[in-house]
Length: 294
Image (cartoon, rainbow, N blue to C red; front, side, top):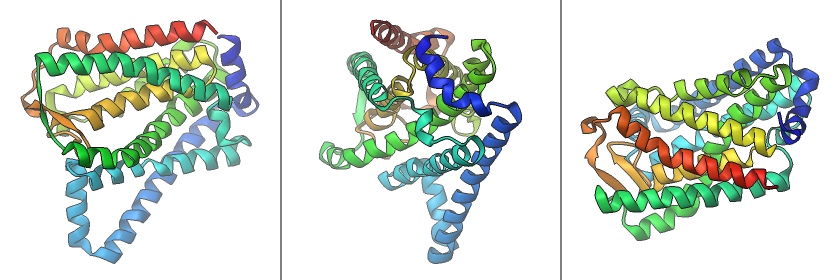
């Protein structure tokens, strides 16, 4: 552990018992589910079941800006759950999951620059060799961009606060070995991306990619002593995947362009997976070196 990481996990040390962390996770999930259930029930009460069923179908497809923004906003209860659990169960503020504000902001911007540069190059190469098709009109896309960015900040922030903030801090305050505080949150993060219903045979690839990202994010958090680098990397990753170039039949409601090939027709091999991982590995390595220069 670096001195910065010791300082980052210090707020968790006083109440790092395993039972407390497990109870915290259960409460966060309950608050999340109850909040979403209450919101859906209220909508059904006001709009009727027919409109509610149509909304659920639209959310499953993610084919409109409205659907995407509702999906992104659905991560707000995770922020609420984390804030309440931190206060009630651990006697600390939500901000302690982020680290020093100035450092977190600096790390976030560095991650945006590094990951944005590498992924932007990959985006350009994909456009040259594979091609893509227009999705949203660029003027509509630009008008929606501020709300898209806000939604992505909410969604990626919720996931980073939960996995690299709460889980990684609580585990690292109790166990010194990174196999526990880095790998367990990363594996859980990866498994939550397993969706054979919509991804079919590609579902394991999504798990591998998400788990790899979780490990890189854990390392960046440990090196930097703040959540900023992991959050910035996650934000850029999702921005490119959801707002710039989406997969046909994927969550493309706010995407500028989409792939020529539908998700169901894509064929991946482990060689393709390795190529997909290369930009992430390169961006992580460059950002890690930049952080270490401080």
